[in-house]
Length: 57
Image (cartoon, rainbow, N blue to C red; front, side):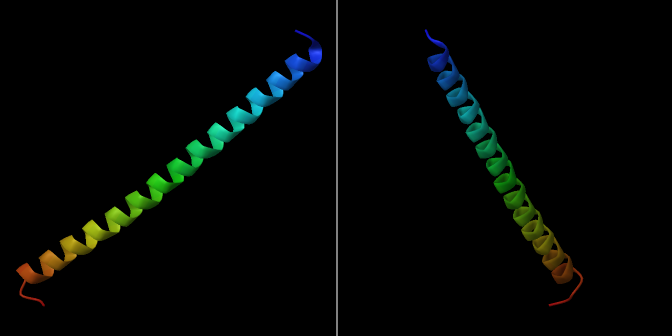
């Protein structure tokens, strides 16, 4: 295998690695955002239940 081919393969591997890293970070961000939404919804539901139990509306 000549040097040019090795360089092309190395560059392709580096690009693929960067793409995978970017996608993983994107997925982590999405999961974090969804977790925050769920946390807010649960908190709101708990507060609503507390209000109803204490005689509020």
